[in-house]
Amino acid sequence: MKKITIAIAEDNPLAKKAIIEKLKKYDDVDICIKASNGEELLALYPITPVDVVLMDIEMPVMDGIVATAKMREAFPVCKVIMLTTFDDDDKIFKAVLNGASGYLLKDESNENIYKAIIDVVNGGAAMSPAIAFKTLQYVRQQQASNTSTKENKLSSREIEILTELKNGLAYREIAEKLFISEGTIRKHIENIYRKLEVNNKMNAVNLAVKNKWI
Image (cartoon, rainbow, N blue to C red; front, side, top):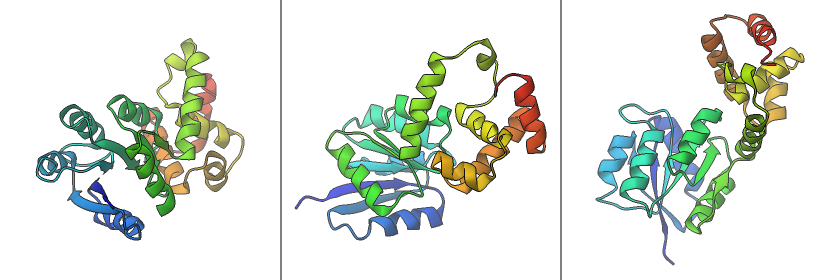
């Protein structure tokens, strides 16, 4: 039986180890490359070509979105699946436009990651349920966009989270409703504070309401 060869591009050693552990039980998967950034991946690939790359987004030297574009240009046969903690709409669509065949969150189960690998090898696409939901929301919001949303500094996911905060939901409740982890919610909150130059959720919600973003 021919094995599916895999490259992992991930700068966090613990995250890399976790991915390896998740795939270890599958006899038809062989992890051949373990790179710490996009540049290292591009240097190793010609020596050991693989079928699928599991690509992190935020890496030093060369991030996953840039590396995906370069991989698809230089080695179009290879499939790339983004495997990341980020579900920000800008990152999702930049990755897809740069040639990614899938977009999964790192907290996916080993079965779902394995299934995604099989799907892209067979010509399909793979997305976490939260990402698929996000994609639909993005398309709908683009269709309904108006002047106020065009002036908005926030991503559609950040708007969703602010809306739920306005409705009184706790971080855990928002995470459950949007099918993402509480840690991801906290990362989005940090980004919202930075973009809006505020330091608490009440000010963030008030500013979004004032500008009619929510």
